[in-house]
Length: 203
Image (cartoon, rainbow, N blue to C red):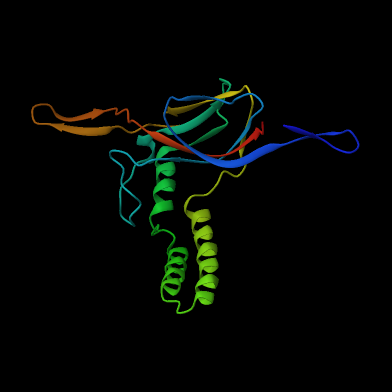
């Protein structure tokens, strides 16, 4: 949709809104013509074999999970690449108070408790604002956005891929009563969450 100004100039009207997509690894997404997408965050939903970051002394092998990458227009190099275990932690940390962020989690918990016990509507209103600020700070730390959004223009496409980590890739080990310990490579079914801002023309 376009509007003609008093001087005869054309002004294009666009809708700009946040969107979240959850897609399986291997998906190819095509950007509609006249759209512009900005990928602002990437996370992976927890799946079989995932252990949350529960504290010190745990043994989690990030290389065994491989990397997730976003490749635009079949380019030889990925425009985004990160370890899958890190991306699952990012999703998990957003919905669970992450113990690796004790100060932020404590401030958010204190703000929530104060809100629940607020005796007056005016105090509740003030405390709701305070909780929102604390929650935003928690999300920024637990599930950080991409430093630079991935910009995708109309007519382009991008692929969500799982690739081996750089360097030696560990394997899972199964125990067989007759054959002993067997190292195997496991292909996991992963669902990827893409946080985007979609700019599209208003018709």
